[in-house]
Image 1 (spheres, rainbow, N blue to C red):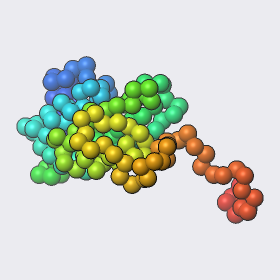
Image 2 (image 1 turned 45 degrees about the vertical axis):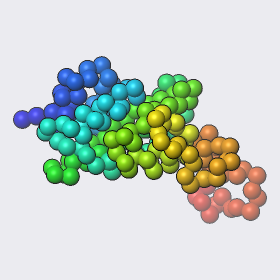
Image 3 (image 1 turned 135 degrees about the horizontal axis):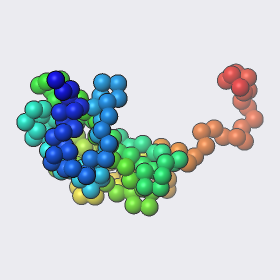
Image 4 (image 1 turned 135 degrees about the vertical axis):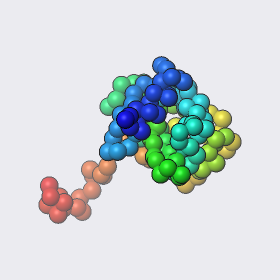
Length: 168
């Protein structure tokens, strides 16, 4: 008997073939990496999928991987939930800093509106087709995206801290 990951993976491969880059099971969480151009189509398919109805978006977030290949520096992670069968799934898309755009999924999931704005606000990932892609938590005139890993974690000029207190 095939498991959930295999069943969904086969359905996605049959429908989208080369748009599915990778499939894996991470701690009982089926995870699929998809080409960013196909994200809305894949999520729409999963929303209407006959075996599972992934019609609730639990979360959407950005991740910065500065050491990845130039085409995969930024990732958008979508977590969906089938409330009837209590099944969760994770979909990931990667993009580069030079083309930091991902199609918006607000037409499918209303919850994506806030989450895409938050991801834009903190990582600078632009969601094409979003109805109001503006900053939501940070100041409008803030010239940087604070969750990117290009900033130092600590202020090296501080003299008032004792490294021994932090196990260093």
